[in-house]
Length: 303
Image (cartoon, rainbow, N blue to C red; front, top):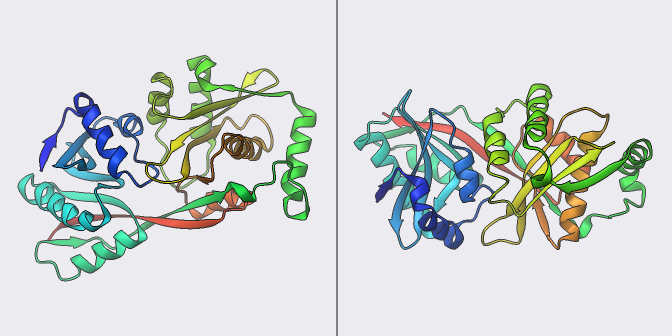
């Protein structure tokens, strides 16, 4: 495998790999770049034929992390590529550990493979994220009927009491968008870590890499940011960003329903609302997901 440390210079190559073999929500070049937060740096492993691995290296503790489910290869080739990656970073590079986030089938493969492995072992304290996916065919735009009653009442009350207008996020002053991020990071209750630097990078890069970026103005003031992109080689859209400044009661419900409604208008079929802990999942269930899948975070170290 060829190791690429100057990832930005190889943007075209990496985007080709993502276009051909991308298969997960976070497979997006600009998303990868926006997640490059010091001291970590992005490192791409290129295996030829548009195959590769999106990874990051932290020099402070010599640890490596695999970008979520980011073995960019046909399914039959992912296991071998992952093993080659482990050999390189843990043995040749003398890395302290590899942190992975993977979906259930790949997690099962890793656990089974490492059970009696001579060189590596899995650290068993898994952290689980829950990813709800919505079938927009089932979303009633007017929220009719008993199943949508609670959501309908919240939406109608909010729009009755406030003036609400949606604009592209790119048209909003960057400092105002960053203040939304600060308030959201400060007040959110999720147990997973939110890095405001990622969102600042997204804003500073003018939402490059997204298909849609939308902000709600409530009584003339920007209060929300939703943004995302189509997942490569799928009919699903990833709503990567759904944040708000908590300045109004039920703003979170209104923000996320507006996002789903807008995406249905744009012709999207399925929407992935991203990974979260169980507490935040309860909030996301208000919008009636079609199904929920899991990713598992854990570390792999040398024996």
